[in-house]
Length: 189
Image 1 (tube, rainbow, N blue to C red):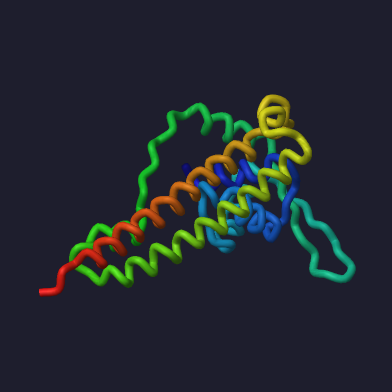
Image 2 (image 1 turned 90 degrees about the vertical axis):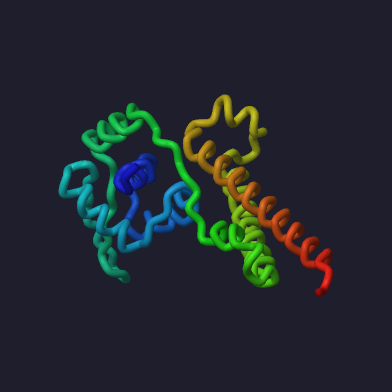
């Protein structure tokens, strides 16, 4: 997947400025695609040049003018083409896993601390996704929203982000517990 498809998908519901797009990425899209703000601004420029989004200038009295972007028909066609392609499997690429792979040969205390930090980060994301899901469905029960909600795509990707972060949290807590137990079971020479 290219960044362009993630940007196009983020712009489907409404016009957004570059700043608003970075916030939308932070809250929703970041659970499956990470991008720095400068990457997003550069991609908006390319998308507009390629005719996949259109931008319009909004004059503001007390602030600098801003540009709002929306997906064009060509951009929607590009998303349609992209969704028709076979999805490639994803792979985990994580520095912490490399460190844990070496657990038998490095300081376990350092790893335990890093695992606890990662578990706390994952828990914060679990809490964020929970809030986002509640906001998206409002007063509706989840089952009702899943059957009849207006925009189900963002909800489903948020559910995936929630499951991913729960898995991260649980694995980090388990791995840290195993390392702690092994530290306690070591018999001094």
